[in-house]
Image 1 (cartoon, rainbow, N blue to C red):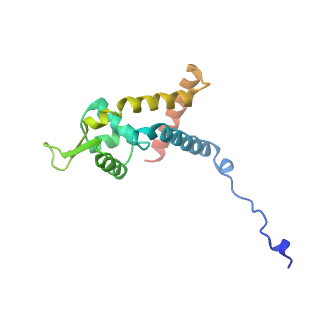
Image 2 (cartoon, rainbow, N blue to C red):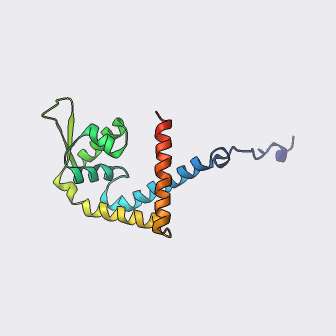
Image 3 (cartoon, helix red, strand yellow):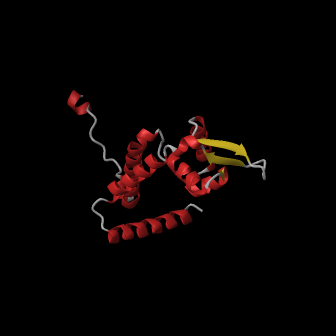
Length: 158
């Protein structure tokens, strides 16, 4: 057999867009949005998702860790890891609840407050960049479509 006959011929690959164009589009947009958020948050030292925890604490004060899971819409193991990282960075403090020894109370530290304006600025810029070229009516349509998709996916997951 000659060398050129042994070269691997291109194989037909399944394409995500053929099997699920909406799911593939959601994946692409979510990946790009998270990467952009990461770049905008870089000078805060936070990773995407950590700012959501801090924003919840800044806006609503100390909370049980389980309540933060619901507020940020994540799972308990992810929240535990994120809280541990934020605590190691000095941005949150954990303590046992005086009302329920099994529950942990998480509160933002004074040090975290120094990041509040930067986080707000990063989120404002993320929103501006994300919605560039979209008028208010189109943004409302997109929000309605995303709410519908979230509802459908929530039902499918239960």
